[in-house]
Structures are given as C-alpha cells and as structure tokens.
Length: 256
Image 1 (cartoon, rainbow, N blue to C red):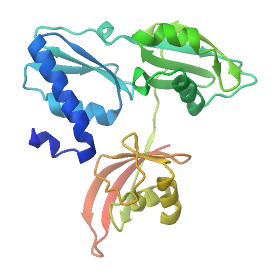
Image 2: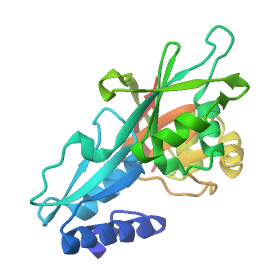
Image 3: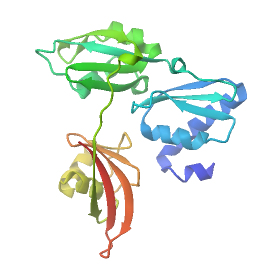
Image 4: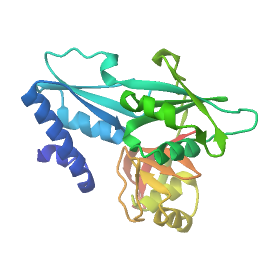
C-alpha cells in the first residue's frame, strides 16, 4: 500500500488505514459500508484507496455538497440516494431581530454532544438556513436544538429536493513565494504580513485541508485547501516551478 501512502502526508496515514479496513470488511462480508460525513480531503483519500479496478466500489452523496458520506459497496449492490441516509432540516428563527452565522450554528450543534462527522454542509440563502445531517441523528437534533446563540429556533425536516444550492465563485490569481511554507503561502494569498499570519497560525486560526495546523513551517502542497479565520478560504491550485530568482510560482484560487 506504499504507493497510496506516498501521495499523502504522514499524519494522514491513520485515516488511510481506516479506509483500507472498511474496504476489506466490505470485500469479506460482501455488504455495503456507509461512512459519516467526510471533508473533501478525506474523500480524496477514500478514492485513492478504493480505486476503480477492485471488487469494492465507492460512491458519494450529492455532488453539490462539500461534505459527503461515502458508500463502499460490492459489485452486486446497486446504490440509490436513499442508501446514504442524509437528512435536510430548515432552521426557523426570528429573522427581523437575529443574524445567525455559520460559527453560531456549528457551535450549537457541537454543544449537543454530536460529532462533527454526523452533519454535513450548512446552507445559506438570504434569510434561509438549512442543515444537512445524518438521518440517524435527525430526530435528536430536531428535538434538542431549540436555541442558537440567544435566539430561539425551530427545526423542520424537508425533502432533499428542497435544498438550497451552493453557489461558489472562485477568483484565480498567481503569486511568487520564497518557499512553500504555510506562513509564506498564506501571507501571499491573503496579502498580509508573514509575521501576522504566523501569529494566526500559532493561535490555531489556520486550517489546511480542514485540519488546524499550528506550525508555520508546515509544507504546503499542490491541491491543498487553506482557510484563515476572518479571511476566507482558498486553494493552492498548482505549483508552477521556480523563477530565475529561485522563488516558487504558484496559482491560487480564492473564494469571492
């Protein structure tokens, strides 16, 4: 399995091993395995391990979501959307008096004692807010999530076809950096000083591939997704080689 390991970082090997175990169980038991919600990086790792030529296949829930459940299944099985056990819940709140943000909702969900992996995307459009959750925790959330921040809320399960669609615009640009260290790359992307980004990194305000990274010297790779609290999310689309002054040329995509 070293040929798979080589594409990922040392700290990601534990998850690779877990996916290998899922694959082996599906193959031996000849029955499907449904995962919790996975972030895009984890989805890439599942694809890399499962591949396309074995006796175990993989399919992900809705294409227009960022966080998805994976279904690993044997050849005989024909999956349908219902097999993903995904729920959609609308949040009703006093719109005239309250503005709910992503962090407020996420914090309230986590305070219920649920794992982050039990819910997917939070969807926003104008004053509307929807939660994507695992079906097995839908009733628990509807019964127990009565307040977000200081606002009383009520929840209403909806049909999946009623979901708010993602609309994400990416602005592509290029830059040169002295190295591929996290502090150098993030400083170039967000146009802030390396000293300031260093403080943000060390304070746990920076994520790479949806995981907090607190080392300024962390080496970025092509395809990495970066997010800095208060500054938004971006992606290192490509590393385009060296300049004559021995700097790295990079192409980045930043969410508008």
